[in-house]
Length: 341
Image 1 (tube, rainbow, N blue to C red):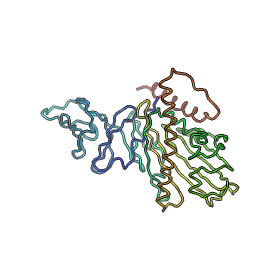
Image 2: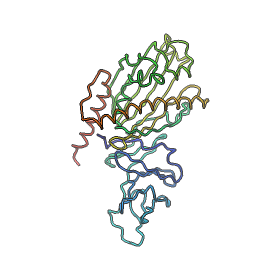
Image 3: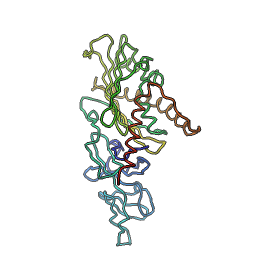
Image 4: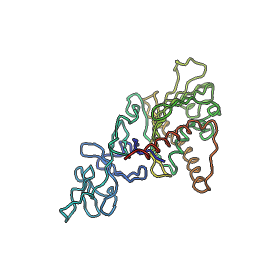
């Protein structure tokens, strides 16, 4: 169940350096990502229309790509401009091109109707290039439906259990109900967890001497973009007193590869001790450890869904945000399917 007329993150900027030809599947479609000589990104169908050989196994010739099976050459817009030994080029001998935009540090691709590709609809992610935030970019590949990962990110009560010894640290998180609001293209979720035990890695970073207040505030936008602002500060202090506080900003993007596999792009930036590279690395490693905990249980969930006869999942109160988001996705998919051509 995918929304087609939407911008999806296809790669980090550093994945396309120099003459790199990057093969990446998005919504079941094989893509070739590369850059023109001026650095502008290109997204083509990663199939030569002649014998369907991957163009990612070809070579750059200027801004064009030559298929290294029978030598056909394609422009960045997908037009075939050369067939060795054949002067006539049939109009159907072309590869589909996709709108692609580089914004901050992510490359976004539009998988639907190209005429509707409006780059003003790309969510703002200024932290990805903000000079006052430090982070290390991350990527994971999931053997799971992207909606299962959306479910996970829309219900932070799992932090108390899945991440008991990493990001969680306290059952208080699961006991607090968040505030959930409908916004354009998604949801806004806020959860205040007061007078609680700091997570183990927060304790290492902040050396807290007592309980803390934790605040999670994020937007979760179509197709699966998390924009999180998180804070940990000593308990029993004024709301605007940030003395000793740890502040984090996170951008995460889920991009379906197939119906049961997902690309996961993520970062968590810190707004404190920005000149300390060891802090940046420690946060990244802690995040990877925690996200492996997520991946382990979500992939196990996916295996159960595939192996067992279909059966209903029974909801609880904590499912409110994820249920709202799944309804939004279903509504957008239905709207696309019923819209006139």
